[in-house]
Length: 113
Image: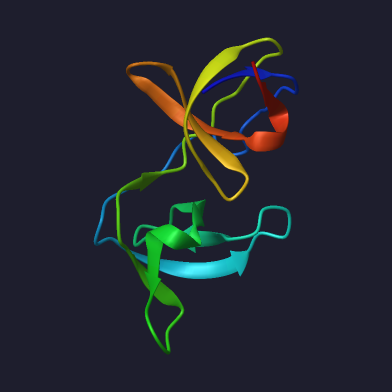
């Protein structure tokens, strides 16, 4: 599916976090604006939002294990920019600009073409 940017988006996280399956993270607060996103901290103190579906919460602990690779690379977008949607998760699209440029954008900032 192709979409076009109707509202510019600027990432609040200019230094993306790249996590691998099996990485342990500390779980923080849940996002009020985007349900099913949790604020995480990795073992070196880097922080990001991550989808709860990618994390196995360890019972009785405030930690979890990544069950698949994840990055929080959000695209900075401009009005009229065209993107290809790979999938939707928790009100965000995973999109591509080219074969080697993949990131996230909020669903409400784009519309289907």
